[in-house]
Image 1 (cartoon, rainbow, N blue to C red):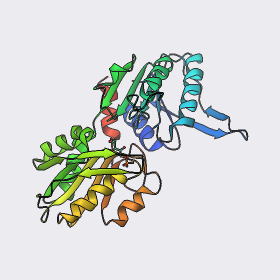
Image 2: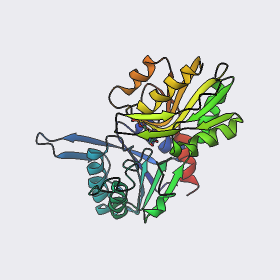
Image 3: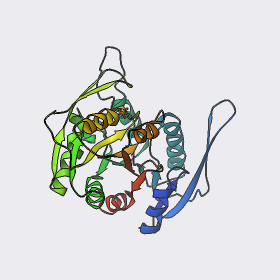
Image 4: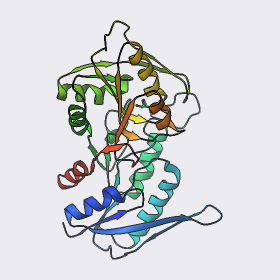
Length: 294
Ligand code: R5P
């Protein structure tokens, strides 16, 4: 598809350049910085976009500034006459705020969808956090495509573990944990989580489980503060697990989460939707497939 152009950023070029190479789309780098007063400055190094399908690649962790950048760029690209603008956001932000938990709260996932509906023609993302809404088209009007990291995670676990047992730390995680366990053909348990605040969670684990010979693998979509993983690690160790692996799709790792988890003697791995020292599962090929099959 020679009419395709990929726009990548410093944080996303590990995926954006692979898309460009594989699909023979031109790669255009975007530069983002801040003016002294905090306003955003954005520049692209090629403006020949008339009649082109433009793929903007950027994960939306630490999202607020990035959203401004993307909106400004989409506005600019549209004015240059692009045929279509597709946002590839391997990590899609604000999906967890999917209802008014307390009176007066903004339902952010709908606000984001309404905003993106105005600026993009299409969105491709990897395993968005869908809970109370079951698919993205319940909130987005534009075309959406969901890429799944589940087969890659299952393969990764198969290679790393002899005798795995999978935990999903909360109800929402069943959609990843159960499918991973099914592909591997191993045991799985979905736990119950109660969240008191961003920093405080309690998780119930069945005390009769014997985890002595197991490689315990906790699978979740997101690790943010790490408290969810840390709760399960402690319980799994009490039940005899010698080896614990925490695997997530999107490693946000805020507040030094990675080190806190490692201190509990657990291994941590994630996909590379957000690049970090533990992003060992490459999702690029699956994203490329989803572009081809659109
Ligand atoms: C929410 O339900 C998600 O699936 C994750 O479990 C959650 O975001 C993890 O957050 P934290 O790492 O802060 O416990």
